[in-house]
Structures are given as C-alpha cells and as structure tokens.
Image (cartoon, rainbow, N blue to C red):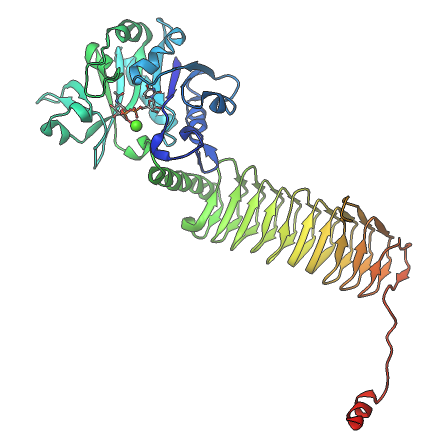
Length: 448
Ligand code: UD1
Ligand code: CA
C-alpha cells in the first residue's frame, strides 16, 4: 500500500507564523504524529505540501516523499499533485496532516475491510454530536451508501445527518487514477472535491468508527488545546499501565518521547519534556520541570528546574534547585535549595545543600560544599574552570575565583575568597583576621 498525507493548506485559522502542521501536540509536530502512525502500514509515504513547503520539508524523516501543490484548489486537486506516486496496481490511503489523534489500529482495520470486500474505495465515517463543517454521509432508507455531501451543498435535511466523512480513504490505485480527471470544480467553493471520487466509483465501502475523537482535525488553537489534552491522556495512560504512578493526571505534562521506569511516582505540576528518560522508583515533583535529562533510579527531584542534565542513581535534587545544560550528578549526590549547577560534574556522595552556584566546575567524591559557595567562573571575558578534588571541604560563603584548584581533602575556611590553588590536605583561610575590643560598647555609651 501507498500513503498520501495532505498538508498543503495554509491553516489560516491558527493565526500563526508557524505552519499549522508543525504546531506541536505533546512536544511533537502534528504532521509527525500522522507520519509515525502510518509508519507500520507502509514505507511508501508521500506528503503533499504547498504553503511553507520548505519549512515543513526540514522536519520530515528521510523516507518520506514530497509533492508540491502550488495552488490549493481542493482535496482532489491535492491528490492529483501526487498522481505519479500512485501505483495503479496497489492500494493507496489518503489522510490529512492535521489529524494527530488517529490510531494505527483504526487504519489497519479499514485496510482489512477494503481488501476483504474488494472495494474500489473504502472511507472511514464516524458520528459527530456537532457535525457542522464536515461532509455528511447520505444513505438510502435501508442504510446503503448514496453519496457524500459537503456542508456548503447540503440541504437542511442533510445537515441533520450526524454521520460524517472523516477524510480518510483507501482506494484501489487504478480506480483513483481513472476517476481523478473526471472531477469538476462545480460546487459552491469552486474546488476539486476528493469526495466526488467516492460518488463516481462503484464498490464503495464505509468503515464506521465509534470513537470520533481520533478524527479531530486541528484548524484553530481551541482544537489544538483539545488535541493536546486527549493526546496527553493517552501518553499518561501508557505510563500508568507501564507501572508509573501519576498522582494527578490533570496537572502532569509528559511529552511524546519521554520514558519513565516503573514504580516512579509523578506528583502534580510535573513537566517531563523532550528526550527525558527517568528510571525506576523515582519521586518526581510536585512542581518539577525536567527537559532533555537522563535520570537514574531512586532519584528525588522536588520543585526544581532541570535541563540537559545527567543524574545518576539515588541523587536528591531540590526543593528549588536549578540544573542547567551539561550538569552531571554522580550517584548519591545531594543538591539542595537555591543551588544552581551549570556545565559541572559532581562526584558521588558530594553535597551542595544550600544557596550555591557551581559553574564549569569539576567536583570530586565526598566533597562538602558549604552554604553560599560561589564558583566565580566568569571574568568578564572568559568562562574559567574550577577543580575541587575528593573529600575537600568548602566552608560557607566562600568565593572560588576561577581558574583555581582545591586539592584533595583540603579545607577552605568559611568566608574565604580563594584566588590561588590550595594544596591537598591543607587549610586555606582568605579573610581578614577578627579583632575584638572588650567593653567597647559600654565605653561608647558612657561617652554619649
Ligand atoms: C474535507 C472533506 C469532508 C470531510 C472533512 C474532514 C472534501 C471535499 N471534503 O473537508 O468531506 O468531512 O475533510 O475533515 O474533501 N488540502 C490540501 N490541498 C487543498 C485542499 C486541502 O492539501 O487544495 C488539505 C488541507 O491542508 C487539509 C485537508 O486537505 O489538511 C482537508 O482540507 P479542507 O479544505 O480542510 O477540507 P474540509 O473542507 O475540511
Ligand atoms: Ca478541515
């Protein structure tokens, strides 16, 4: 079988600079949902593009072919633009690029019915509570298919019909090729209607599907939000059935490519985005945004923002931590409140529990970073590295002016401004010595 996906329309109602079919649903462009869904049905996939064709072409997988429809003269005209892609001796499925919810199982069933009944065309119909805008399936009194009538041409009586054309068809290639040239744009819109092929062909089959949500076509941002919500529910159900606890599915956002291991608990207001991978028995949230991160097992991330980080087993992050690009936390690390880590590797069992910035740092194992420690990595021109070796102890409120190295087991006294390397096992104190003046306060009082 061959598959043609129509996506040449402009999508005016989206009111967007981004082409409609590139609007993401759960992090993945609508058109790619459709392409991924049909992937198992056939490797011969062709997308018909028109508006913003070059921009859309950029995101297509390499096996997908493109045909250009220069002017959008209707759905039949769009299929005609891909005429050379149609094989007269093979079936061809036509569907739209703005239907991100359609299921693979549904498409497989319509193909089965098409083959078993040896139809020239089989269309998918469904029942819509509000069928406004759709083509209606008109049947005779005994229920046999008569024709499809578009909203613009429908009589008042036909407008009452709730069974609609989803816009998904399977044709015999030869039948489609023979019928396309016969279509005339003699209708209210002056367009070449693909639905007319169905009226011109014999052996029409209708595959009626109950679950109409699948055929939601996204035309505006209200429908986009609805598609997002339905797709989100699907993703969360897949996770839950895979052994993940989702405490509040209504406030949990997980994008298409995210993986989560079993017995992990996702608390409310959790956002798992991009290529994030989370291990087993983790506790995530409440209120965590995790994007493109790899997270091991038994990790806790609470009220934190993490992007591009690698987090190993048994690590604890937050509340209120920020992990930025290039952060690597080895096993059993603890990153606490108001700690920011950027492009830094933190060795096993090391801790930075409060109010700290670690940037461009390499921290060894069993290091203790005191509250308020800052790696001063930027000198106004360059980013400079800081090295803190195993078992070092950095006292609270210290500034480590990079480039600098704190040797193994070294001890930096609280409040130090460290500008030079500290050798291993030494103490560095870099602050002015305290002076005490006994009775000074009483003397001052007596003077005034
Ligand atoms: C079409 C069907 C209607 C069906 C509905 C389901 C026709 C005549 N009508 O109506 O029976 O109920 O879909 O959603 O087919 N496109 C192109 N090139 C064109 C025109 C359209 O690529 O010249 C693409 C659009 O990008 C869109 C899809 O085809 O993805 C559907 O086109 P649209 O004009 O929205 O068809 P409808 O009027 O909704
Ligand atoms: Ca439409």
